[in-house]
Image (cartoon, rainbow, N blue to C red):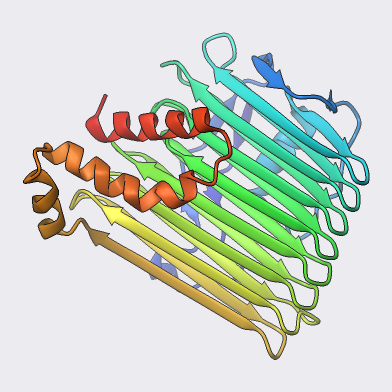
Amino acid sequence: MSVLKETYNVLPRTSFRWVKANELLLDPIDIDLTKKYEYKNIEGEGYSFLDKEDLPLSDAFKGVNRDMVDLTDKNFNAGIYVHVKEYEEKTLYISHRLDKDNSVLLEKNIFELENNSKLTVIIDYYSDEEDTFSNILSKAKIGDYAELNIIKIQRINSNSRHFESRYSVVKERGVVNYISVELGGRETVINYMTDLKGFESEGHVKNVYLGTGERILDLSHHMNHFGERTNSDMIFKGALNDKSKKAFRGTLDFKRGSTHSEGNEEEFTILLSPDVRSFAIPLLLCEEDDVIGNHAASNGQIDSDKLFYIMSRGFTEKEAKMIIIESHIRPIIDLIPIEEIKNIVLDSVNKEIKGE
């Protein structure tokens, strides 16, 4: 058994302790490292199961915490290596089912893109009612003029724990696009770090989340602007119900040499219950002149007039709320290129709101 420490997603620059926003504290977790995991489904070509392939991590990258990163880095029981050659284009669809026989997933993925290449990866995590644990570590290297797209859907049950740490390095005019949909898990803890190293490199993160019951969501994203004229944006949209809790920690870090760069972060949450807790902690760090950093955050209840208007058209209160929530998150969901996946996401949101 391996016992992991309880501090996660520590801010790169801590604030006053009484704010209680510097990190996430959870009970220690016991992990049975002897448990095996088998892939359920991979569609696409040009990948291999991970063996000795690897990419280095930045010393600054801690992931959700360093113990979690090391756990999967050294003990992974699933994972793939994808190498996209120059001018190649690949698409992969990966489906992970967690159940009684596959209750511990330690997944390590390596994505290496040469110049002028493109890779799109769609990953779907789902489960039955069994208590499960998943800890994901992904590393990516995006070459000049290359493009990496990762679309993640997480819809595991409300008794399970889900952790993910993701690190990427982007070279000249390379682009990384992340779309993440976080709908399940008793505890969902996410930490992404992107190093925009090259001239005019770009990093884009779009996230949809839903909190129900006593779910805990802790979402940390760190954009490091190293190169000149780099560009990033983070857009988070979600809804919280019942007694769920959410923390968003978004950091725009303009390093020396990143002149003429721009970063934006936005976070919007719909509060469906007076008992939810929502924190937004946008952080701007700067070592360079002539850069632009913008942030916006909004937490609010559904407008009662809007709700009444929709209900006056024959919809129940739950149906009216679903319409409002769907219109809130739909701009991000529509970026998913596969219609079947879009419908799975919307159906999962609908079931969560209705309590099914």
